[in-house]
Length: 158
Image (cartoon, rainbow, N blue to C red; front, side, top):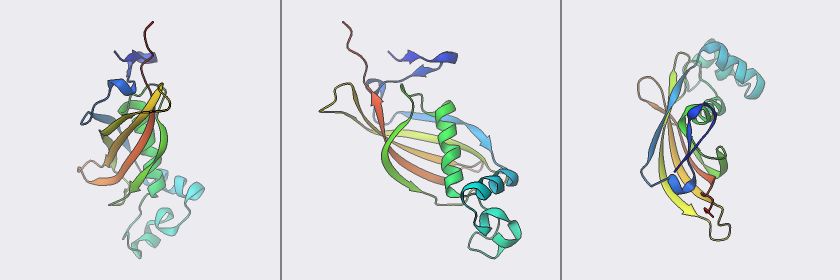
């Protein structure tokens, strides 16, 4: 049985997961000011900073940094998407941004468990491979993240 975190949210151990299990997060609305503020701090390229400059690039308009989309994805998964015991602890993965994230996009994350592997050397934990697609309000996928996540196993009752 899953444990309950503060606020009543069920936290899942590795043992609670199964291949094909799905999770959907809440939403985050992105505006131009957020895109520019993130870019100024972390990815100061013209197509993230100024719409006029961005029009003459392959983005053809202001686009959020992929790292901004990744940060929003993490926030959504932590707050409402992946209720994993011990938090979301990454052990590697693969990330793609098939479409740009734009001002006005309302993002949410749809995740699916692809693999559940108990550790052979550390019986208290294992790896869950999870595919998370970040989608906008039209259903377009703006990010695909396949991550290997370290999760604790249910303690042996004794």
